Figure 1 (cartoon, rainbow, N blue to C red):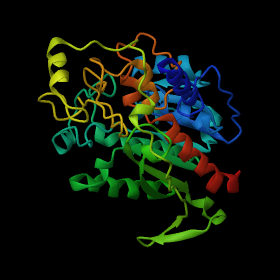
Figure 2: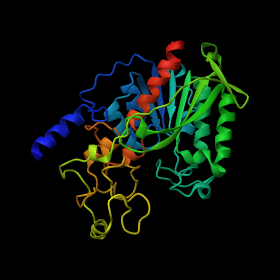
Figure 3: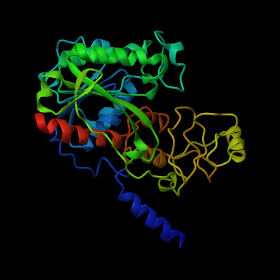
Figure 4: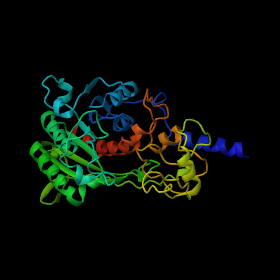
Length: 360
């Protein structure tokens, strides 16, 4: 009976959209062109690709992430350099001046609630994003300057919710002003991946901007005295509980240290492990998985003395199960720092249906 149950669960998973493989996917690439900045390992790019867009290139500062991106997505163009240098280039191909979507996820460590927030603002230091000392909280404005230069039809930028409240609200206000100067109408949405077919409760802000000359194609609404194109991004898919992604095998996981084995035994399901109050959580199988911590371990299995394994982490983030991590030391670093592909696929589909189809 147990074997029959496991077989049924495996078959069910294969039919779910978050259970997918790059090698088995056919991408139409007929919805428009996309270029991705701060591209990381390609989470957003895979989402656009799943939606039928042609992601023609990427830009990132991290050489290891760029290797993974190129290996898995094979872009036509790739630029390994800071966005500050990239936006000043005068040798970019014509295709980049005729984009349908310019995508980017400006690094967010200085805005996340898990970080130091305002203590890091304006400081030049080596964050987890990138390989050089840099001031993270100004990179968003370099991205907007790139949009001003390339003039894509639409710009989409993802960030953490922390950028829109507290003292950080001044950054959101400046983002709006700079997009306006660059020639775009802009709005932002707080979206929850658990309502978008992703087995993870991950909330993110998406700034979405439309080039001003294209407003004639749309019905509009007035918000804060600005004319904005209407865009409905309401997603209400049934949440996917952790028990639906828990793997029955004990392959490809990081073994717990003696200390964490002790904490695992003492911790109840759904609670934080030991003295740690963030990230080190023993998963509740009857709840949606939370965001995985970018620390020494991913989340912990509720019943087995181990971390979540590679397959479980990939499913949680809706990453393809055959993603090639090359020589990356851990299998969760790339998904943790990425937009879940299915999350971006849902957004890209709505952008196409509600906006691009009226322009192209």
